[in-house]
Length: 408
Ligand SMILES: Cc1ncc(COP(=O)(O)O)c(C=O)c1O
Image 1 (cartoon, rainbow, N blue to C red):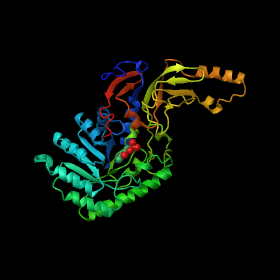
Image 2 (image 1 turned 45 degrees about the vertical axis):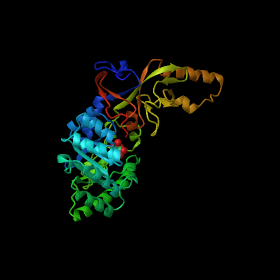
Image 3 (image 1 turned 90 degrees about the vertical axis):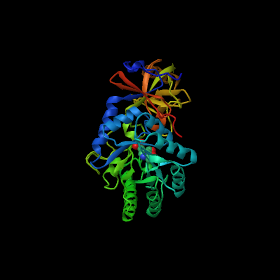
Image 4 (image 1 turned 135 degrees about the horizontal axis):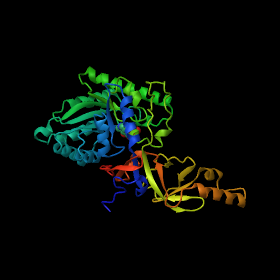
């Protein structure tokens, strides 16, 4: 089972085994280029690999101009470093003896790599100091970059006030083993606010928090090389802020169904001519096979074990007349939207029979393959082990998802 792959290079897409994660390379490349075009000079892109967990995809982003990658977990950093990605920010808190020991081991094992993490508590710096002060030689000398995370309004991680950030930054800067790198101000809950106005308001607040912190630190001689944050929903706002200089968008490469529900900035709206949510398109699909058919439903081999459901069920690509619903572990049900709207209460037996006959024609046939657009790309990718990258109708590459399952 371990060496099972859903596809081989050169196959037609219709021959790919299912369930499989398909990546449309033309669209993916357009999304990557579009983001780079939308970012002004002087602002770096450090794309988030929590979305795809894949070294081949990271290499495409770096080739297009990203300075490196973000990850969220030590396990993801381990997988990508091993695969040759050597500039990584763990945009998250790393807490606990086991994890910090793994971090120190990475710093020692990859002397050429740039590695950074976030902190938001003095106790966390104490733990880092305790472990990194045990290292000897070159590994011990400020190889690990450390960013102080501030709460940018998302109320997840991060210190609340500039004074708290200053205290942490001073402590890091005074360390012989850690290197003060700057601040992270990521506003997660702003990303999926639906209207441009809501996102603008949220990010204006994040920018003012980041600015106040950056300026206080600077007044005490602590220069932030990095003021980082931003995701797919708001990156243009942070990019235009004059405060953020490093952006961390992830989902833009794939553009899932939930992100597509965000309203776009008007083309000539603020900020910039490209709008707030640059026009990314869906490049990620779950290929599914109809494995059972009745006159009124088609059952596909994609259920909860092949897609996440936290942001809604997948959409059926190119078939607005179909809906995917009622997933169980290994199954998902497809029906006509019209049938769902009509419900089971057809006026009489004759009209029920007529509608079943019409459904039977419109529904995909037994054995037919359909493409589903995941509701939320990151947790969907985490369930899979391969990307089947195709162009036109031909499989061009099969990429391992090296950090799949690395949520530790
Ligand atoms: C710290 C951080 N930065 C960036 C991102 C990327 O966000 P997105 O995938 O919405 O672009 C995330 C996503 O959760 C995140 O947690």
